Length: 253
Length: 253
Image (tube, rainbow over all chains, first blue to last red; front, side, top):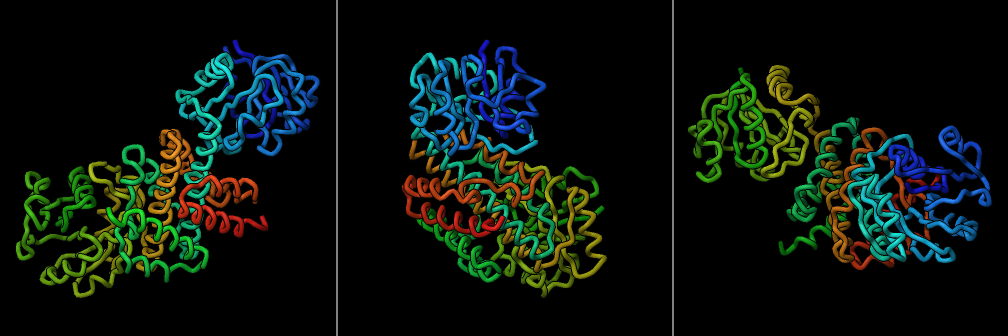
C-alpha cells in the first residue's frame, strides 16, 4: 500500500482524491489546504490540515497548487522525508530541487470543476531522479490509468505547449464559431456533431491527412468571400493568418 | 415512398447512398457519375448512368458534386421536373435558379472516405422555395437524422464559415500540436485524450466559459516562455495573434 498526502484542494486534487479512493492500495492519509472552506469536501473522508508542520509521514506528497504557488509550497516542505511530486506541465523537476526526493506526476488532461473524468484513459507523464522513486510513482499511475509515460522536463514543457494549441486555441476556434452563430441567430448546437467528429477523426487519420477546407485546396475565391463575411477585425486577422499558414504548408502537396 | 437520384459519386454521395438503403421509404433509383470507375461502387446496387439525358424520372435529385462544379451540373438538368437540391454549405439556393424546383439539403458534417458516419446525429439544414418542396425534403431528412433545421442561404453561409473555424482551423491546431510533438520525440497519441475532452467539454460548458490557458489568465511570463520555445516562425505568429485576441476578449472578465 502506498500512503499519499495531497497538497492543494482544487480541481486536480479533488479528481485525484476521488480516484485514489477507488483503490485499496492507494491510501490518502491527509489533504492540506489553506482554508476550512477549501477543505470542507475532504473533511469527512480523510484527515485534513492547514499547517505544514502537521503534515503526516507519507510515501508520496502530491502538490496540486497553481504553477506560481509551487515554489512557496516547496519552501514549506523541506522537513519531509517522503517523495514530493508536482503535477504541473510547464514546471521543471528542478523547481523542487531544495527537496531530498522529488518527481513529477503530470496528468495530461483538462479538468473541469464538477465534471468527473475517467482517469483510465488520461495519460500520466512521470519524471523522477532515481529508479526507486520512479517505481513508486509508476505503481500509483498504473493503478489509476492505462496510459503512463516516462517524460523528461524538456519533453513535458513541449507537451504543455502543444496542449495550448490543441486545447486552449482549439477552444478559441469554438468561441469564434459560437460568435458567428450568435451574430446570425443560429444555435451553436448545430456545430457540436462536427466538432466531435473533427476530434474523433484524428484517431484514424493524422491531422496532416485530415486537413480540408478552402486554404488546403488553395480556393482563393472562397477565402475572399469568407473574409468579407467576417464582422470582427480580429477574426479576419485570424482567418487570414491561419489560411496563409495552411496554404504555405500544403503548397507543394 | 420518395424516389431519389444521386448526382455525384464522392464521399457525400456514398454516405447518403448507404444510409438511404437502410430505409424502405427512400428509394434510390439511380446514381449519376462521370466515369465507370466512379460508378463501380453503385453498379451492383442500383441503376447508374454517365449521361444526363438518361436520368430517370424521380421525386428528388440530389447534387453532391464539388462547389465549383454545381453550375455546370445545373445547366444539364434543365429538362427535369423533379425537385433538384444541392448539398453545399457555401452555395446559395439561387445557384440553382435556372431550375423549376430547387432546394438545399446540407448535412453539416466532415466526411472521410471509408469512414461510415451515423447520420442520426448529423444536423441536416434544409432550404426550399415553397412548402411542398420543404415537406418532401423534411421527410427524407427526418428519416435519416434526428436533427433537422430550416436554414436560409445567409445563415447557411455563416454556418459554413463557422465550420471553417471549428473544423478546418481546429484540425490545424492539431497539426501544430503534432509538429511540436514530432520535434521533441513525443508520440502525438499522448494528446488525443485531451483533444477528445476539449471537444466534449462544450456539450456542458459554453466555449466562452471553457476557455483556459495563459492568455485567458493574462500570464505574460508563460506566454513569453512559450514564444521562445516555438521553433517555427509561423507558429510563433499564430501563438501571438490568438493569445492577443483571447487577452483582449477577456481583459475585463
